[in-house]
Image 1 (tube, rainbow, N blue to C red):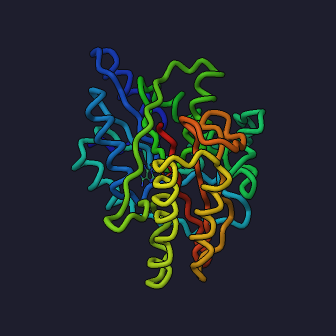
Image 2: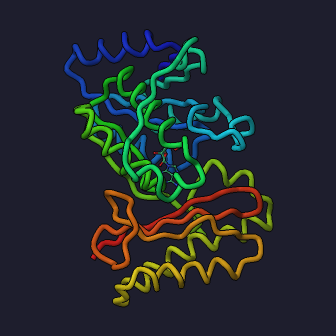
Amino acid sequence: MIIAETIQEVRDQVRAWKREGLSVGLVPTMGYLHEGHASLVEESVRQCDRTVSSVFVNPTQFGPNEDLETYPRDFEHDCALLETKGCDLVFHPSVEEMYPDGFATYVEIQSEMPKQLCGKTRPIHFRGVCTVVSKLFHIVEPDKAFFGQKDAQQLAIIRRMVTDLSMGITIVGCPIIRESDGLAKSSRNTYLNEAERKAALVLSQAVFLGQRLVAEGERDADRVVAAMSAHIAKEPLARIDYVSAVDGMTMLPVHEIENDVLIAMAVYIGKTRLIDNFSVKL
Ligand code: AMP
């Protein structure tokens, strides 16, 4: 596996592959990789001839009071995992490489979409995500890029951006990978102490409860959200940021359960903010 720290190295390698007629998949990550990330790499390896993964903690998607400084990092472990999954190149740039002196150009979706759900408490988050993902798309020029349904709003926003800017890259959404007890895998789970780790189960329990209500025929989205919220509220270590039912494409609130409605949540467990969701499939 090639480890590249500069944009030029990545361009040279990917262009060499393209000259050989090989297809290229991209898996963007912030590192501290787990089986959720690994599943995206596996899917890229299945669908593409070569797989590039980026490991970059992107400063522009963190707000001033968020966890940029403390975000967990373990590049050696990341490389070991990527290599076993069949990744061909890992791009691990410095902040200076990605954001040169005088950097002033951002990619931002001008609709309500990035202001809903996580956007309410993280107003600059999706501008940072769109900017860094656009840069990675320009650097790698992949045929396909792989993102987790775990970050459902991010996935919808990236699909919008790729369509709007005619980027010509196929976006592949991949299912949420969970711990055996249900907790969605996340690099931020490492922040949880023992009591918080147990309490964090209310997120996946609420997801499973919501899925069960929908499967039993409930079509009132507000009732589903209320039942899920009530379950989370029983846990003293949990504080709800939001539990919402939205249109899966626009992220705008809905009141009726229909196909592709997204029911998403962000919940603080102690100081750690965790997310989870499910998409309605009728
Ligand atoms: P991150 O490193 O948190 O920025 O995540 C990088 C990519 O991995 C994103 O597309 C995430 O949606 C995806 N991802 C993170 N956790 C999971 C998970 N538990 N299951 C599936 N995909 C995930």
